[in-house]
Image (tube, rainbow, N blue to C red):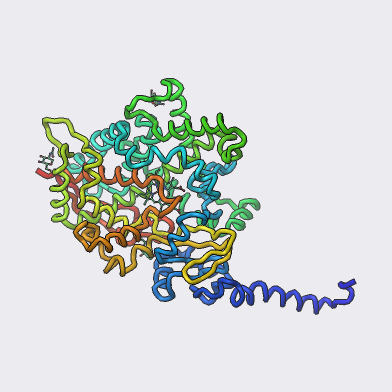
Length: 536
Ligand code: HEM
Ligand SMILES: *[C@@H]1O[C@H](CO)[C@@H](O)[C@H](O)[C@H]1NC(C)=O
Ligand SMILES: *[C@@H]1O[C@H](CO)[C@@H](O)[C@H](O)[C@H]1NC(C)=O
Ligand SMILES: *[C@@H]1O[C@H](CO)[C@@H](O)[C@H](O)[C@H]1NC(C)=O
C-alpha cells in the first residue's frame, strides 16, 4: 500500500508543495486573474487586506485612489475584482452577472426561516418574476398620475411637515430643536409607508418622534453589524451555532421585522373589510395591492410550476412582509440622507435659495402658503421639469450618493471580457457610485458641489450624455433601483414645499462634510440642525 511506502515526512512535504501550489503559485502566477493589477501585494493570496479596509471603513477612498493609479480593473482579493470605467460597468450591470450571496443579509425574517425579497434575489428568472408585480406602480407615469400618491403627499407635507417647520420658527424653540436629519427620515418613512400601506395604515413618524428615533436606533444596529454576515458568513454562522450572540443585529432585526408584519396584518384586515380599495383615496395601499394581487394570480395560474413557488408562494404572508419590509427600509434611509444633504447645501447659499424659490413659484399652481386659500399640489410633470430643482437634486446625489459603496455581482459561468482581461466565472466584481461620480474627465473638480454642471446650458450635447451615463446613484441595468422615480418625486415635492415658503440657515452642521464610508453613506453624526425663517 502507498501509505506504507511513503514516510510521514515525505507526505508532509508533498502536502506542503500541493498547498503552496494551490494557494500561492496558482493564484499569483497562473490564475487568469494574475494579469490584473493587484490592489495590494497580498490580494492574490488572501482577502485579509480588503477585509481590513472594509472593516475599518476606508474602502471608498482607498479603492478610488488605487483605480486612479492602476486603471479601471483591479484585483482586490484572490477571487474579487473592483471596476471603475463606465464601459466595464455596463458589461457587468447590463445583465447576466447575478447578485452573489452577499445580498442574502437582506433576506428578512431570519428567525422564522429566511425569506428573500426582490432586492436580495440572485437568479435572474426569479428576480424578474418578482419585479413584474411591482414595476408598474413604481413607474414614473404611474406615480405622476396617481391620485392616491398625490393625496398622501398633500397630507404628509401640509398636514405634518410644514406645521413642524412653522412651530420651529417660534421664539420658544431652542436653536437645537430642529434636527432636520431625523425630520427628513420621518418624512421619507411616512411617504413610502403611505404608498405601500395607505395613509391611515402606514406610519406617522413625523408626529411620533419618540418611536421614529427608536426605529432609527434599531435600524442602525442592524446595518452597523452586517459586516460579518456579508463578508464572513461562515464565521458568523459558526459564532451563532456555538452561542456567541449577534444579539444587536438579531434583536434589532426581530423587532423591526415584527413591526412591519403588524403593518401588513392591519392592511390585510382593512382590505378584506372594504374590498380591495379601487377608490383612489389616500388610504389606498398601492404597493400592497399590486404585490398581493400579483402573487395571488401567480399562485392561481402557475401554482407549483412557478419559479416563485418554493420561496414566495408557499409562505404567502411572510413573503409579502419580507418584500414590503425591504421597500420600507430601502425607501426611507436613502431618500432621507439625500434630503438632508440637499437642505444642507441650499442652506449654504441664500442666493441659490432665492433663485430656487423664484423657479418654484413659477409653478401653476405653486406650493405657496396663503392665509386665504387652501394649499395646492403642483402638477407632477411640471415639477419634474424644473431645471434648477433637478440640478440641485442631481448634484447632491452625485457628490453625496446615499449608496456610495460597492455593489457586488458575480461573473457568469463562461469566461467574459472585462476591459482588456478575460475573467472566468464565479468571480466577485463590483463598481461604486463613489468612484464613478468622481471621474474628473466627466465631472471637473469632482469634490466641489456645483449644481450648474447639471443645467441644460452646461456643456454640449456630448458632455450632457456623458454626465448622464456616468450618473450611478440608482445603479443601472436590470437591478437598478426600482424606487428611483418614487424617490425623485417625493424629494422634489418635499424641497418644493419647504423652499416655496421658507429660507433655511445652518445652526450646527458638524459631521455633514464627513459622509461615512460603507455600503450606505450617512452623515458622520446623523444630525443636522437648521433654522427656518418664513419668507414674507
Ligand atoms: C434617493 C433615494 C434612493 C437611492 C439613491 C437608491 C439607490 C439604490 C441602488 C444604488 C440600488 C441598487 C443596489 C445594489 O444593487 O446593490 C437600489 C435598489 C433598490 N431600491 Fe433604491 N434607492 C433609493 C430609493 C428607493 C426607494 C424610495 C425605494 C422604494 C421602493 C427603493 C427600493 C429599492 C429596491 C426594491 C431595490 C432592489 C431592486 C432590484 O433588485 O431589482 N429605493 N436602490
Ligand atoms: C386601516 O385603514 C382603514 C381605512 O383604509 C381603516 O378603516 C382602519 O381602521 C385602519 N386600521 C387601523 C388599525 O388603523
Ligand atoms: C409664503 O411665501 C410667499 C413667498 O414665497 C409669501 O408671499 C407668503 O406670504 C408666505 N406665506 C406664509 C403663510 O408664510
Ligand atoms: C469616503 O471615505 C472618507 C474617509 O472615510 C470619508 O471622509 C468620505 O466622506 C467618504 N465618502 C463617502 C461618500 O462615502
